[in-house]
Length: 263
Ligand code: CO8
Image 1 (cartoon, rainbow, N blue to C red):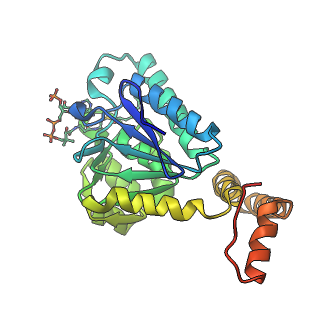
Image 2: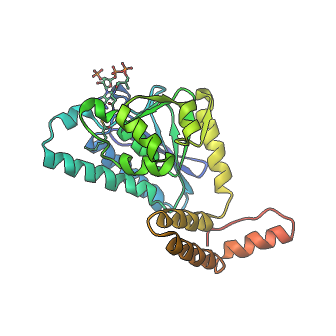
Image 3: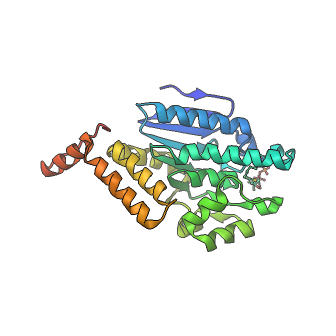
């Protein structure tokens, strides 16, 4: 498929992954309302497209993934508008986190403020070794407002999250890997190919099992352990009603490669 382009976001399918590229390099891909709206339109289209198996979110250029919410746009807001913008961003990032298809952040540079929060809403983060992360909102007299106060501690622990949020300092990719903010770090020149290879590998697995796994992990983090374990068992049981489970187990027993169809 050829590339689709809206004002600030590009979309193309590579292999079976829908690549969403935030494309405002002159503003280090900062997120204003229009950019976020376009991101969501492309994300929803990718989720609904039967030919797309996974989503990748990245930034244009080699400097920034996303350097935050657009500070110029925020400077004009009153408290009510800021709260609405925060809810709008939160709901938009929920679309990625709640995607039934895996969502990978290919973090190619600065991931700051809302940009770090965008990466946090993705299921897996693969970063260039040149990427830098941070929640610098305190430098602006703000707090993270796009999920950072909630997703960051859940990912790296409360102490490390507060260290980042209270200090407002940036950390490099190696430190992000060390604290569990990203899952992999690769040389910048190899980021796109690494992510493409990663999406190829994930595409060969059972889509329906991946969807159920995302559901189990996400829903489980919102309830008690006992309830989460019941939910895991229910989702595990549902897998046994799928062709993919028959195919996966038969392929193993027949010593051949499984061919999953996502049903
Ligand atoms: N918003 C708007 N414009 C930006 C942003 C941003 N977040 N980041 C960079 N830009 C613009 C710059 O203003 C500049 O534009 P211009 O050339 O027109 O002056 C251009 O991008 C290039 O930036 P720099 O010249 O500053 O590039 P440097 O290489 O010197 O510095 C930095 C790179 C260090 C990344 C620097 O640009 C920077 O510190 N940016 C701001 C980072 C930041 O504070 N991000 C957090 C923003 S707050 C936030 O994200 C809150 C999220 C929650 C929102 C919830 C809703 C209310």
